[in-house]
Length: 146
Image (cartoon, rainbow, N blue to C red; front, side, top):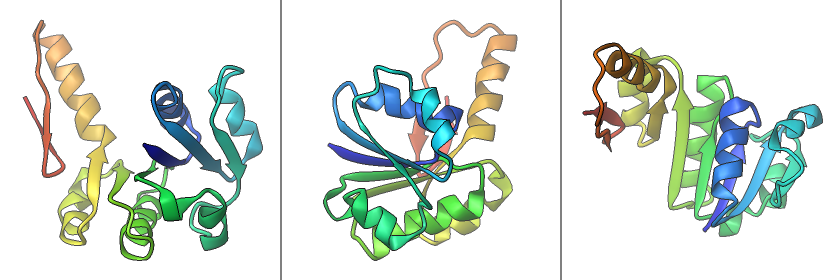
């Protein structure tokens, strides 16, 4: 797969390192210093720029992308990027990380696939507290269930 990740914070960098093992990865971030989180072994492409800039997205190869994942710290940016990816560039899979789960339903109505890091972390902490040893998480319709 050809994957574009926008946002090289902790989540974006971790995802890029995992995905590069079996996929072609491009990561975009406004701040070049954030690419240091990728480490020396990163074999993907790093692009400094605004992930909402159509020229930056074209430079990243969005026309051939199989997936775009928006992992910035800004819900609205991530939602906009997912919509641009799907509606303008017809990317088959566009996923937006959101931190405010209360907005999730509105975003789902816009046709955006979401991952709520807040809900996911809360579920993991809950399971750790009640010491569930074997938890299976199912992500369906952007809702995490066990």
